[in-house]
Each structure stands twice: as structure tokens, then as C-alpha cells.
Image (cartoon, rainbow, N blue to C red; front, top):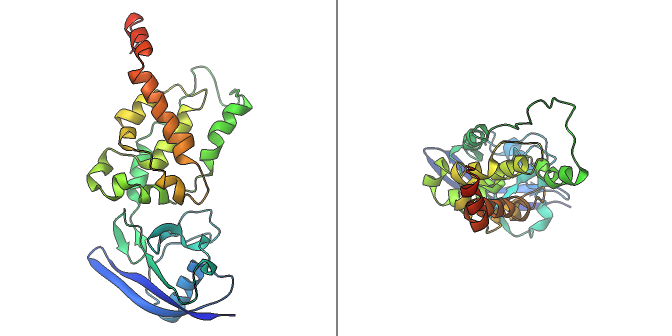
Length: 249
């Protein structure tokens, strides 16, 4: 059976805005995106919301529901009490374009800063050989749907706009880790992660892992291993001595 749900939805643009209250029908089995679509159809035809697959695989409908970064299409209305007010706001870390739609171009800029896979010289496509354990190590990271909820919740850029220039965020530090863990990649990803992508700014609070809709263990399996590799390469006294003795950079 359906009921009348209470919603507060942020309306506005980059010039400003605020929360507006709505009462809208909610039916059994629906997700928040269903209700937002009904709101568009019945009360606010100009409400802007980004979405595509409605199956939790495209990452388009990222927003914040009752203050928590989530996918609208994967948040079931059954998790809320019928008399509870559901507040839907745009992702806070990125500039608002209109209503629930934000400008996530920051993320694509950071993606372009990461050098692509660099295979060994003389090894062509189709000639790569890897152990299964090496495949499995980075396969988890390939599940990322680029919803950017991890970057949105990361306080390094959420609370400090000035860090955006020097910090790639957990999504793209995870991409660096994926390439670093590839046994055939010959680029120096460890130094890049620290010097270029701001790995040192991450203090592993696991907030990125907590909001990942694909349940990727971003902190434990990507960020912490990269920090360990940085520590080994830059601060291990034996490695430092070996670099001095053998004149390695």
C-alpha cells in the first residue's frame, strides 16, 4: 500500500537556493529516484536531477539523502519510516549547476592527470602474461562506477576547497593503485601518488569506503597499500642506503 511521504528537496542554482517541502505519494518497493520522478511529473516539472540506468551501474544519480552521500536509485524508501521527512540535496563537494545536478568536471580533470598504462618495451597487445593472483588484486577496483560519492564524502576536499588542486581524491588514487599493482606497468606510480596526486593528504578515515555502492574496500586495499609503498620507497633506511650505493633515483 502507498502513503504520502514528506520530502525536503534542495532547489536552486549556483546563485543560491534552499530546501522546499513536498508531500508526494510513495508506493511499496520504490526507491528515492522513483519518488523524485513522481515529484517531477506531478508538482515540479522543472526539477533538475541527473540519472541514467536506474540500476546502480552508471553512477549518475549521486546525491545526498538525509546528509549521507548515496545513489538515488539504490536507496529504498523502505529504509525510512512513513512519517520521516526525507531530505534530498546535491553533492556538497562539487559546484551546483541546478537543483540536484552538480558540476563533477573536477573528477575528469584528475583522471586526465594520471598517465596511462605503460607496458614493457617490446611486449605487444595479446602478449601480456599475468598470474591469476595479480589479476585478482586489482580486479576489485574495476567495479568502480564513477559515481564520485567517495570523492564527495572525502573531507580532504569536502571541507578544504584549496586542496582540490593538489589532491586526486580516493577514486583516482585507487586508479593509481590499480596501475601500480599491475605487474607489467613500468611507470613510477608510487612517487606520482605522493608528489603529484596528494596521497599524503589522505588520513585513512575510511569515509570513502563507507559510501561506496560497489562495496570496494578503497582504504584497505588501495590507499593503505599505496601509503606502505611510499613509506618503503621514501623512508625505509635500507632502501635509502641501497639507492645511494647504487645511484638509483
